[in-house]
Picture 1 (tube, helix red, strand yellow):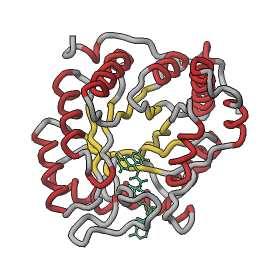
Picture 2 (cartoon, protein in one colour; picture 1 turned 180 degrees about the horizontal axis):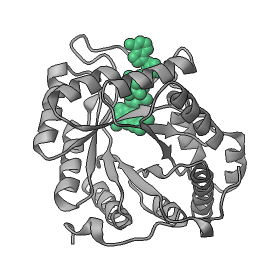
Picture 3 (cartoon, protein in one colour; picture 1 turned 45 degrees about the vertical axis):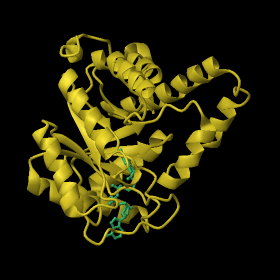
Picture 4 (cartoon, helix red, strand yellow; picture 1 turned 120 degrees about the vertical axis):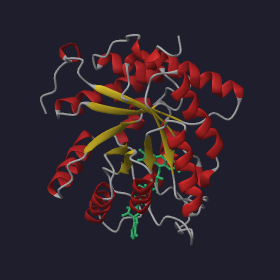
Length: 299
Ligand code: FAD
């Protein structure tokens, strides 16, 4: 792939950022710092995750509501089907609509104990496609769903995974956001297969800037993402060198984005882990420059 140099990028990329709901006041301050740093880049939206088993129901709501109130960035709330009845999930969705939140990231979710088989709640939504259809009945939400360039572990094969994504789009989702991955080719193959299956909705690559390989490996296998062996080599000997690790992390993720850009990608979704530096640096390399618009309300 003939990728342009960073210096030649037109700055026409769009970005979105994912955060998790903070547990403590200190974490809340860190999250707000990250939002204030990233907001001037004018993200299309920011999203807030929903903890396993609905454990962050209130915190997710409070975080999304605060972003909606204090900034002009469109805020999206993640919502899962885990351990909840349809009525409970519907009530959460209605409360979001009433609070002015117009974008839901609709997910099945994972079993409360990692590694166990997923069991549907008897009175709940069966899976993400079922949840999307339920949300559509409640209000005209903008709905994002998850996609897996390297196949979801519960899928019998990659075609079943594409069929499942198609079912989610056909049920009313507007875009898919991908699980993180480190091979641009894997993303392009997935995008081609999705197009061949008649999926026209945008598939936004999820970018995880990795500065701790061991930690990433822990959840990579559970979510169907491969960690290439070159990643270990690039971080070799850097355990006690946090600054160098950050530089290596930014370089790897920026290179991935540059190759995706060369393949036509113009929207990148960053898993920020509530820290701004890496995502900000990568966006800068992609040609984005900070303006003031998105912080109007916060100022
Ligand atoms: P689905 O699309 O419903 O399906 C997952 C897999 O199960 C697919 O492979 C599908 O083929 C198979 N499947 C589904 N239904 C059936 C069926 N009826 N019969 C046979 N096979 C079936 N998790 C959280 O807990 N909170 C979050 O905030 C969160 N945010 C995420 C954001 C993104 C962008 C991504 C990519 C993932 C996120 N996750 C989150 C993780 C997600 O919940 C898990 O990956 C979960 O295991 C699958 O969710 P899904 O929405 O992809 O499920």
